[in-house]
Length: 349
Image 1 (spheres, rainbow, N blue to C red):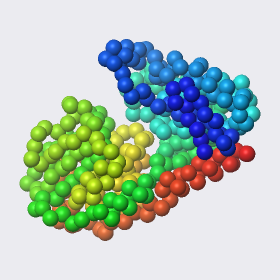
Image 2: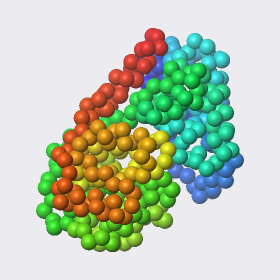
Image 3: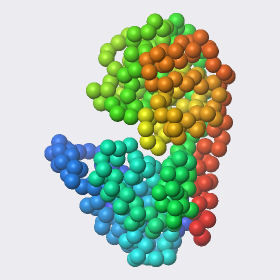
Image 4: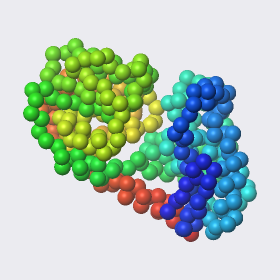
């Protein structure tokens, strides 16, 4: 279907669709990382700004050689927004689609920085009108953008991060009833000092009289990792294939929401789809994650306080929750691909 740019190489799609995707380089030396860290303070929105002309030339070269009528941009890095006006002016009849995995001007990374938010708003106002459609990850992001830019509200379309059916099916098929005296909880994902802080979760397991353990899988900064403990075990991130076995052995899962912002944690839908008890920890009563969690039954809700989390853990240990169910059929990757295909078709062949 779509094709990708890796570094500055472009391959054209057989169906006349060109997709621009940036992959991070896997290897950096210490000096390179230091220079990038310093440059990032002065370069907005990101360091890829320096490479935009190379991507533009590569895209235009391919479009001149192939019958390309549509271009799909992965808009992370956000500097890719700036390609749309240039490309539209150069090749006016090309349909341009933006895939915005996170919101730009009101993302968590923009919180607390007036200058960065101002610049992000400016880039959006100048660039978004040149897109024929912009894909966002949930209805609340769409609603926010539609209110902010009513003149182009019809351009914003929702396509969620899909559910990997094979992953869910394998976890559910391999799952066995726990045999130990302690209930094993599992959290796979990230934590942050601001926005998704796990300290109350750690305290709930460490200091409350509960027969439960917690396994955490993720690449956490040392400052946010739990202290060595018999009840909490920290592990580096593992492959998705390894996570199947790990998830199957767990007795219960933890879904941890963001305190603010419009992003939904990436593993939300798959966590809800697995047939195990889920402890949902949140603070923000207006979070878009709540809309999806409300579709599931058997979820134990807890505010991000030691008392609430401890109570939620005890409820799961006691089996004090409704039967688990979540109809994820409309969120599968196949359904998301269908929505993408329909969006592309809606803009003409």
